[in-house]
Image (cartoon, rainbow, N blue to C red):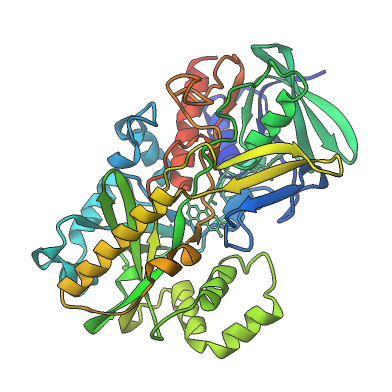
Length: 486
Ligand SMILES: Cc1cc2nc3c(=O)[nH]c(=O)nc-3n(C[C@H](O)[C@H](O)[C@H](O)COP(=O)(O)OP(=O)(O)OC[C@H]3O[C@@H](n4cnc5c(N)ncnc54)[C@H](O)[C@@H]3O)c2cc1C
């Protein structure tokens, strides 16, 4: 039987990046990339039960070549130093910076230094940043965020098939098989109802933050002494996100949300406002709006539209759109980045979550005796209270700066408006030791010599930065590490 040098499970953002990077660094090595290809539905064998807080977006993952990069918005955000909380990450931002640059370059985006220069060049006199500055907003940091337009599916962007990676499709990995407690010998894969074993020297799991811990739970359930790290599946984090209010500026301003930097054709730049307090790091976006006020119904429809490429709208969603042409206008202005000149802006908060072990993915047998993936995404009361206070600070700042706040969400409704940004992470977090993590700083699973994890699940704290750029950077780093440590 063939023994691959590397077997990567999952062809999403993480797996696709790693396969392409390994191929370039080690052209003579054999690589198998296993992808289950289920579209928007997970397979029967992976039945899901979502308990507790709902994510809010109609679809939060995609199973197929490119993974969730088939759905994403293409926003590529560089985290900042406080996102790498020293008590959670075993590395700091400086160690990852060279790999962020490789990641930005691979996507055709500006490097960090060019982005810093672009931030300097932004004509603050004409955008909302200038309206704030006036000495009142020193603790708020304005920055341009790069966004690919249209967002590409990373698998196809990297052209992995022509790179010569052996892509095995419609292949659902059901478990890892161990040669000894420290060594994985093979994985079991179901293809067309048949089970086959695929052997490799090194295995890298890239199934995403909800599927990777489940695969580990299933593999460990056969022999309880294996994969017994108590952190597997815990600390399920996301970015709690939602509409928090509206502001009316004294004059109409061309939407700075879609600020374009000179010379760019296919990349747009949105303006983010960072706000860090007590170690949390939240972000706000100002989105051109065409109607005063909002409701959970219209916010639901806006979220539904984010995944409209993969699903048709329901009758009630269509009716909501018919009744709210202002929402259609807002979405069109978002899609086409046409810089409308308006004075009214929606404020969206994207929050920093500090998850605990009650927020998790686990495996359980249902009453029917069928095993299920149980997903429980929880936000602690402290986290919600802290976000609410941060939001109040921001709204007060707007008022202090003399702007009229036309709507804002009060404490009793705040929770209802907060949904997930579909940035699942944290379930196999990096740590210094097996006491606080599942993988070490080189993404190797603690106490297993040839098993690595390198998808969104390894991110211990998400700050407010959209995760994909970090996932891509981590995979370029892992490819270099594997090449240097054959
Ligand atoms: C609507 C939407 C918009 C988003 N916008 C942004 C954005 O603008 N910027 C950003 O940074 N992030 C964004 N995200 C989040 C981002 O897309 C994800 O964080 C990222 O794609 C996760 O990458 P991953 O490789 O960890 O997992 P995935 O991309 O989900 O890939 C996992 C892959 O593994 C496969 N797989 C799973 N289990 C198995 C198995 N047992 N056997 C074989 N294969 C398996 C799956 O089929 C899938 O292809 C968005 C997400 C959504 C839903």
